Length: 191
Image 1 (spheres, helix red, strand yellow):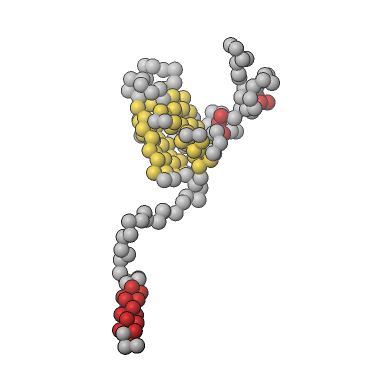
Image 2 (cartoon, one colour; image 1 turned 45 degrees about the vertical axis):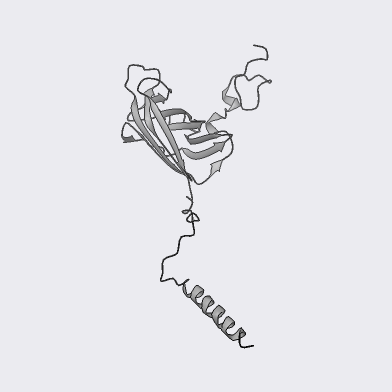
C-alpha cells in the first residue's frame, strides 16, 4: 500500500507539470505540424497590371478554376464584350494568357510561349495565384512585349470550364446539331 502513494504522487506531479505547460503565458512548442491556415478570402479578388498600370476590372466576374489539371484565373464581363477582361490558364507548366483592356492603354494582348521577349510564370500558394511576365500586343509584332502581373486571392476554386468558354447560342447564326453543347464550331467526323 505504501508504494501506491509515491506512484500516485508522482503521476499527480507529472499531470500538474503537463497542465501548467499549457498556460497561455508561454509560447507554444512546435510539434512539426503545419500552422493553421490563414482565413480564407470571403470573395475572390484579382489585381491586373499591364506595363506598370492597373487595369480596371470593375464589373467583371472574377473566378478561379481548378479544372482537370488546368489552374485558371478569369475576369469575365458577359454584358460588355469591349470591357476589360482576361483569362489565364496554367496547364502542365504551359501558360496561356489573353488580356483585353478597355480605355487607357487599350487593346488585346496575347501571350505566345517562346516568342521573342515574352515570358510567363505562374505560382500557386494555397488560395493565392500570382503570374508575372511579359506579353505582346495581338496582331502587332512590331510592338515590344509589355510586363504584366496578376494577383488573385481565391474564395473558391470552381471545377468547371471558365465562364468565357461558354457561347451564347442565340448570338451564333447557326450551330450544327452534331456539336457538343456550348460549342459553336465543330468539324464533322472524318475531316
